Image (tube, rainbow, N blue to C red):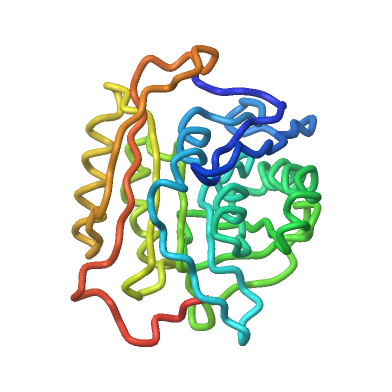
Length: 255
C-alpha cells in the first residue's frame, strides 16, 4: 500500500520556483472499497512530473463555462488541482458519489491558492460504466447540479493516476477517455501508475486498447518513489497520449 493521509504535500509546478504546498483533507466517513480517502503514490509522482511534460495549454473559450481539464478517479484531487494551477485553467475532478465530498473538501481547503490564481474547480460524477454521462456536483460534493453533454463539450486534458489495477479498468478507462477527449491535435491524456508485477498484464491491455482507439504515446517515463514513507518498491510509470492524425477532427468540441 503506497498512500499518505491528510497533510500538506509539496508539488513542483516549475523548475524555476520552489514547490507549492497543496493541502490534503480527510473528511470523516469518506471511503472507497472500505478504504479511507488518501493520496496514493502515483498521484504524488504525476503531480510533480506534470511540469516536465510540456502539456499544451488549453485555449480559453469565452463561449463556454465548462472547464478544459478533466480528472478521472480523482480521489483526493491532488493531480487535478496541480494541473489546474500549472496550466492556469479550470478543471472538473470526477469520481464516484462516495468520494466526491472528499474531493470537494480538498478543493475547499486549497481555495486560497486557487482563488489567487483565478481558478474555480468543480467536482463531478463520471461512472466509467456509463462514460457518456457526466454530472457536475454542488461545491460540497453532495448533490448533482448540472449535466455536461457530449454535444456541448469535450476536454483538452484528461488525467488519471492509480486507476489501473483491475482487469476491467483497461476497457472502462480507454472507453471513457475516447468519449471525452477532444479530437484536436493538442488534446492530451496523461496517466500514471505503479509498475507492480501483479498489474503488468492489465497495463499492457490498457496500452493496446488506447492504441486501438487511435491514441499514441507521445512521451513516457519512470521514477522511483523518492520518499520511503510511500512504502512502494515498484517504480512509477507515466505516459502522455495524443490522437493520431487520422483520429483528429475539425471542430473537436474543445472546452
